[in-house]
Amino acid sequence: MKDTMKAVVFKERGQVVLEERPVPSIRNPKDAIVRVTLAAICSSDIHIKHGMIERAREGTILGHEIVGEVVEVGSDVRKIKEGDRVTVNNESFCGECFFCKRGYVNNCENGGWMLGCVEDGGQAEYVRVAYADNCCDVIPEGVSYEQAMLVGDVLATGFWAAEIGEIRPGDTAVVIGAGPTGLCTSMSARLYGPSRLISIDISDERLAFAKEHGLADITINAKKEDPLEIVRSLTGGRGADRLFECAGGRNTFEMAWQITRPSGIVCLVAHYEDDPQKLPLRRMYGKNLTFKTGGVHANACAKTLDLIKEGKLDTAPLITHRFALEDALEGYRLFESQKDGVIKVVLEP
Image (cartoon, rainbow, N blue to C red; front, side, top):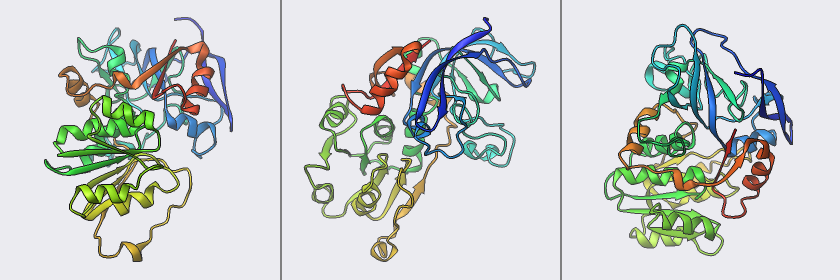
């Protein structure tokens, strides 16, 4: 390996830059070094850029959606080896603490969301992965890097959301937001057999994408139509059985609990820009809603890789734009603008 590499860095609030950085090295026997083949830009990277993630450290290399090839492993690494093609989990987790043993890896007492936030991430030529046996999953033969690209974060989020939503066959499931997270949630929700899958957004372009790729049976543009009226008209006046809030807009929390039927489940998947959200308990009284909240426990990446291999999940169409790593700032501008039909942007070192 060479001594230095290009990397996308969170310089300070409002500023992301491309810098030359030292190539990472093994610091712990449980580490691995991965040569990055593809890294995606996530909405969380935009949140970091604008200072919305308070724990994010200035000077950190961004990027937590990563695939690549293992080039070095620490002495305690057993499950992966040099030359393996791997996905990298967005969460670092020890596998041994109270939370990890129960599958709550986002709450790991020794990790959590570290990569690209408080530890250098993967929008670079190489990345150091802590707890590599836990946080790297080998990509099955026949699955491409591009097919596996979104496993470690946005697909993990959608898969986890659908799981905790407790969808039953025949349910009406509504997903607010047809961005990457909402689309991955819709894709995963399909696995549970809802009779009707509804997508709500304010972009006709994104709603059309969802419909075209089988990620919605019905689409609703909330700027032009009344989602509450439409969903109730489709459900005998009841509302959605399961609601997934993946947009994080100013009024989407209110929309979520109103659309959901009494005794339904509301999954709050989005990261909200405005804090706090209002919880109008008096108006909610009697609906007996169950709320489930983020963030993702990315504990099923190996399972989703198998589902991709089996053809039951396919996130490759979500990758709409590709940039060389040296053009990363152009990729950031496009992703943040949400223009040119962008869904996901990947960077190639």
